[in-house]
Amino acid sequence: MELTTILLFATAAVASLFMAWVIGAGSSGATPFAPAVGANAIPTMRAAFLVGILGFAGAVTQGASVSETVGTGLVEGVTLPVGGVIVVLLIGAGLMAIGIATGYPIATAFTVTGSVIGVGVALGGDPAWGKYAEIGAVWVLTPFVGGGIAYGIASVLPRPDVPEAVSVPLLAGVVGTVVANLEFAFLSSVGGTLAAAGTAAVSADGTAVTAAISLGIGVVIAAAVRWDIGRDQADGLRRFLLSLGALVAFSAGASQVGLAVGPLFPLLADTPMVSPIAVLLGGGVGMLVGSWTSAPRMIKSISQEYASLGPRRSIATLVPSFLIAQTAVLLGVPVSFNEIVVSAIVGSGLAVAGGAGVSPRKLGLTVAAWIGSLVLAFGLGYGSMCLVGP
Image (cartoon, helix red, strand yellow):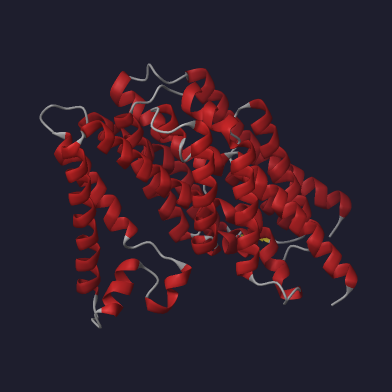
């Protein structure tokens, strides 16, 4: 391999690490535990510490799906050269850094997606319209689905005719059943999921056995949460809330690492000594460091400036956040965690306080920043490649 190729790949890798750091400091590091911090269930610094570790785990075990989409699935007919990869990463990281500095959560998925498409089209590639339709559907539906689920949960939890000893364990059971069916890279040899691994362990076959194991895991988790809440309601709700935050942090790492390292995937064919898992490890480390060093500012912004959250409202926020995040990972769709969590916060706020706890100005500026970052990233990517060439 030529020395020039190695040096260019090293430059792109450094840009990717910087992008991973920015993601860890911003969307991935801030949003998962922000509702729990807002509910005073965990201190800000401890939340940043935990989200870094959990995000790293998610990046390594589930990060390949979105990474492949970002690297090769957004533009057809061309492969991004090293120069294009560097441009994409610098645009995405630069816009994210602006968001961190100003306190407004710029959507990483929008900036990276926009810049990749802009660079790819400038190089003569064809838009992947089918994938855009899938991505657009997830982005557009997220506020309605996430906000709607959060609204429904927040409406039920405080009702006297629906005891929390029943409603919260039911939620825990649903979440546990979903966890049993998450796909993990290290379980690929036994079906990819915990439920499939259990089916293989008992030497059984068929979807009925897998479904039974999934439901069994959900029932066990529901029973454990019911016992915990019955023992001490306040502490039980707090522990369930923190468990949800951990799942969302893990899912954030699985989704967001692709935005940092996905652009590197097309370059791996020319660098056979570097494996995809090594790239994911590097991205996970970058996000971990970002979460530990700079996430507290954004955690405070999300948890305190958007709304005042209690434990029940925070649970209503995190359940749909986890479900939508894992759906995006399954589909290989880059998704904004800011959009997911903020939409759920708004939905839960409408149910509990009629929207009184949500700042319309802050929300409006955030939505404008999301749309503007997508358009700006596309324009910068397209313009940069037209100026500098491939």
